[in-house]
Image 1: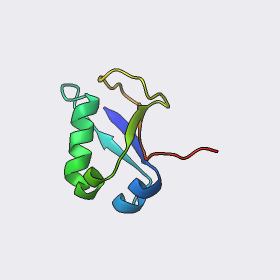
Image 2 (image 1 turned 90 degrees about the horizontal axis):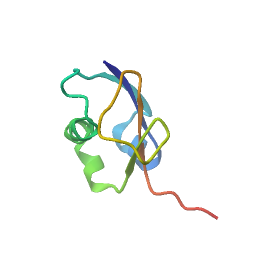
Image 3 (image 1 turned 45 degrees about the vertical axis):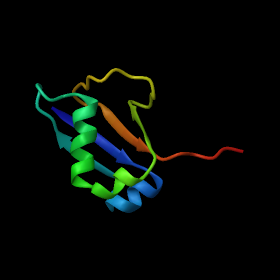
Length: 79
C-alpha cells in the first residue's frame, strides 16, 4: 500500500529529503507505526517539534489508506 510522506522546514533539512514514497503492509497501516518507522530512519527528527497531518488535515484517525499523504509539519509562526 503506497503512502507519500512530505517533510517541511527543519524536518526536511534534517532528513535531506522533502518527499518520499513508502510501502506499508495492510496489517501495519497505522499513523503511529509510520511515525515510529520514520523516527527510526531519521533519528534526529525526534529532537524536533512537529505535528502530523494526513491528507492536509491535522485531525485524523490513526488508520492510513492507500494513496494517503502524510506530512511532518514543524511549528509555524503566523503574522
